Length: 605
Image (cartoon, rainbow, N blue to C red; front, side):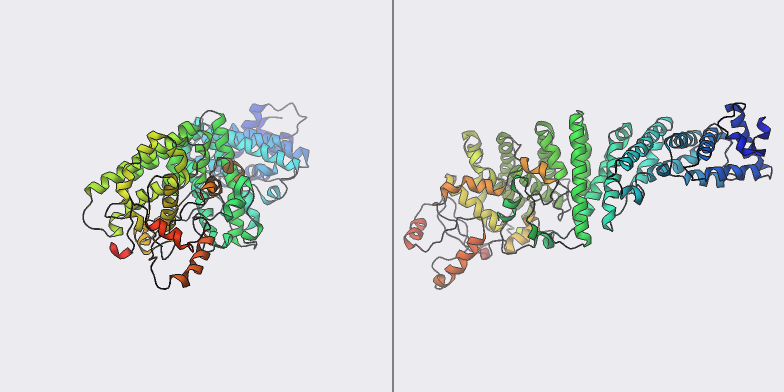
């Protein structure tokens, strides 16, 4: 049978037992069918399209026909016209690898590669079709626990990635066309059964990042992932999930004790409904596990240092100025924990550089130093020498500011200064003992005394809970001699701290507070300094005098308020549970010499 007779009896073309028809004759027959459309004859072309649309995988003859046809089309792509053969192209791009046998998958992938490489007119359609497979159909998602379906998932996606790599090599323009598609097709999270869809999509993004395509646009891939993590983070109403108690201080240990050593959050602390926030909570946890696994793989492959630069760029674009995120920033924290000597040091240095840069907006600089303080305080993997060196630079910067500042003492006029001061005190709340154990590090903190005694009065403006804990510890280790008893009207915050914190409340922004997800916490917890461990170090010092802020010990109604004050202190973990009912103790404190004497009223500003 000759090639001219092929489509007169189409079945003979796909007879796997017929050895009379050569591959050349098959290709020629397909080309004749394509050419017939241009001459106004569509019968043979329509038969070709119908063969592609057959979905009966149990019909071995039909599968063989489709395999032969797809291979013949791969050798005839130059004859395909985007206008006259639109029906054929629609049939090809409408196919799904998920429904095909392996030999059909291979033939279809080969056809897509040929189409993409032959004409730029088909590049976008080919890429779009391949990316579409990053979102498995529902029947796959629902049966992933079955080994057969899991195996098929691997077979499909491995072919998709292989095709994308080959196209990117054959068509240098392909990656620049691919990345916008990846962003546009990122699935949204609006119902529970879609969490695995999002996770699978992100897995594929990160697999691309590990390939040669990632070398071209890995930063864009990380931005997609970071943006998705941030969006999920912001969908969660953390206050509802934690059932936040406004009477707790920032050093409250209840939640941290529950999270220590990788424990899960207490059951009562989670909102157990099926709201979108709960769905986002679970999805975010899965995505963080996936992202952490990828970073670990990068470390094992010896390329984490290279990946870190792309990751930080994504962090700076999407996370740094997002003040309500609680979790997504821990992608940076974990990367640093995997390589403290390189990534760990780089992260802190980059944050400090942003804070010191006059070219950055003020909120960005304040956010950067808040991140720096939280990072230095919480990262167990950072050596004390590095923490001390960062503190020295902050102390020197604040000391320089004190020498050149003007007479305007409004907190909002000196936000960067107060942010720096609060960062120093916050880090010392966690690291004071280890730093002061080294004489050289202790000497580097000497300028801090003059900073805190400056007319800008950071002890009265910075967050009261930070100041109170800092002064308590400073007194216990003899860093300063503090005699004044000054009680904050509001131990959690003050009007002055709100003023310097601004609209975004950067005075209360501590981005590396305890990690709030369940499964992914297992890799964060071993590298994290919990406040409970700091407090345990101070158990031997509970007899030291307590620092109370902002009050008048001679007040006529002091006796009436002592009970309320003791209750408030007991609710806070920032002070020993110990009252001043002993008048001799109070008198002893008031007679102590003072090197730091904070003002007793906000009105002093």
